[in-house]
Image (cartoon, rainbow over all chains, first blue to last red; front, side, top):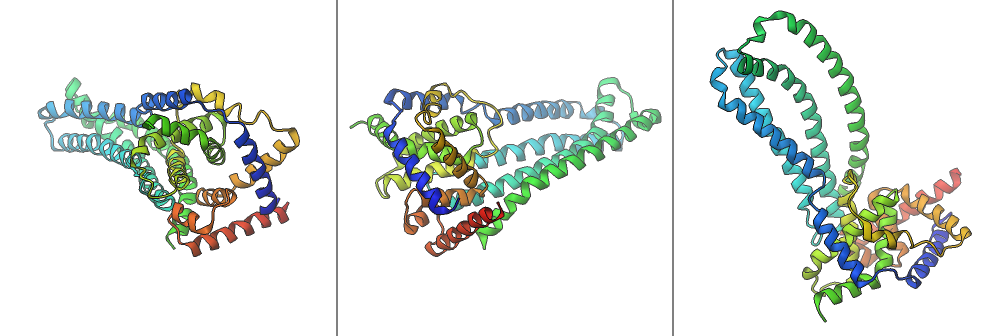
Length: 198
Length: 162
């Protein structure tokens, strides 16, 4: 099928569509109203819930930070709090950037460039987030153990003997899978960006 | 004429345009309905900013294509699209089987193009001149010409491969 044939079929379809007008005034306004109501239940909703959980945890750690009585527990605590605050903020900001894109003023090219760049940043952030969350598992466990049970896990060697190997295996499998998915998505996006920016 | 009245008139006149864009930028019925509704909503939202500086169709293509890009990969959760069912599902009911087959082939060809090429081919098939395609896409006229001839070659090479 070449472009001329495609053109013929397209024109025929356009004619048919012209003949069968389906929309009514009532339906159009109903559509916009429905959309307005469902605008907030998108991906941002889940990210916001996640962010709130992180902030509450960070607040809990901050309030109890004085219970971390050694330098290494304090270091783990500060690292955990920083991650719980920074990661969700960056993710929400990037999601907001996508939603704030000016579709009225931007041209099609600008929208593609801006959307693809932000999406790549978001994917990179999610990837970094996956790696950091594994580090977080190592740091938050002794911190919460100390705050909630007053036990210093670093002095109890046994638990690390099982915890570390299990986590490393899980980390290796998970990151290999994550990297493959990430690569596939960003490769096609990168191609479009390169094409548009040359 | 009130805002609501003039807006609905424009949408009614151009419903085919929205339908075609949603068809080339989505892979299934639910996504298509979702995008259709999102485009109508975005057009309504930006209707106040439309000041007749450009042709109504240029404005509509721009908003609709930009919305389609923003909606890609975003559709993780099914939204409420009840009212749109009766529009999108009924749109093809009058086609005969032979035509539907040919149309399916057209969509297959278009779906294999990337997001930018899809937009360009759509505008070309809609009979837009390079000048107007350039205005909508933000590409230069020469660039539009080069890219369109690349798309033609791409389509041709696919036919030869088959």
